[in-house]
Image (cartoon, rainbow, N blue to C red; front, side, top):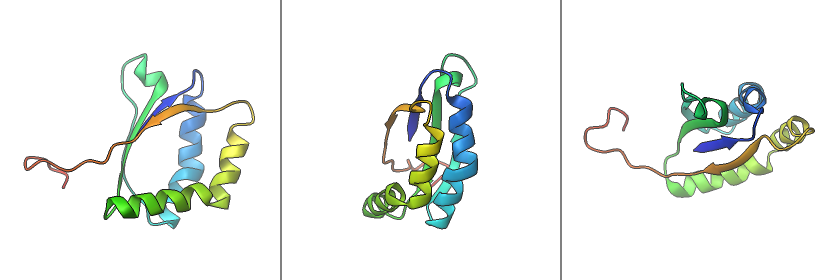
Length: 104
């Protein structure tokens, strides 16, 4: 997933991930592989990239439905967006590893 962050909201997005999203992912058995921010501006100020592992596309759909309905997520999202939306939009990709990829 790639999240395009609204101006000035990167710190708030990272805080929300650190304090709320990742613990909810863990509780729901959604396996986070890694989380990255580009090194160079302007992307370093407005792009968060992360990879989650799911056993199948169907499992991912079910996991996201469960996550999006989770009361802890709904509360964290509402509280973190009191002063406006943090994320403008997200890009979602389902990927298959190549035969030369270290991550399988």
